[in-house]
Length: 300
Image 1 (cartoon, rainbow, N blue to C red):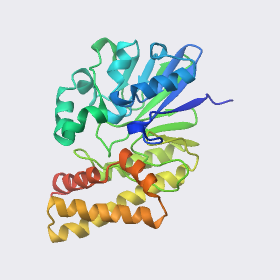
Image 2: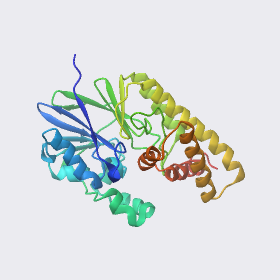
Image 3: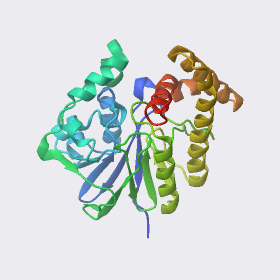
């Protein structure tokens, strides 16, 4: 049976290609987006829809992998145009009232908050659908299955659809044309052991394709899943070693940054490509996530 066409919408985050995607699935009776992207990329989202002969008011359903701003920031805006929004139970309260989420982000991003992420509108209660692990979401003739995949965030879903899994951030960060992965490990919910369990769940499904939000659709599924697992193991070993010297936060960030940048250089990444990886997955954010994991999960 022919597979439904999936369109990758490049949201051109911070005027750079291949940093953040939304995925468009269109049928006779529905227009579905996987991810909304942030509020700052609405013009690119609208342009991508227009290229398919659509407008925001044509979007009927939005499935969010998780509620981080780069994935869910424009969901409220799409809901105001008529879309139904689907989200993990843990993330749902923050979509109804994003005040705490935004306050936490503002402490990190400061005066860059608006330029990076734009407006994050709440989703009206009558537009928000809380779904559970393994539940079949029927949208017209299409079926999507949310898969609880914690590790990057406790409230993370991947979505299985036909032969593809939209894996959010649990499948790592990757740019088309490069056989190179980064593992996005932000605070406050990084959990390496749970993440590896989530990867095992992806392996069991044996999808033909993976679609991480950062960025694109790939057929070398085993390479990608195994690459994320290796990245997590490498990060855990690095953390064990570096914490022996009880580094300051600044020292840990600097050491982690050197390690990741050296890794990129070793596979021949250009400065331009490194910058796109950095937009999609800031190195310092992962360093902070590892430190919090060490203290919170490992009891260090």
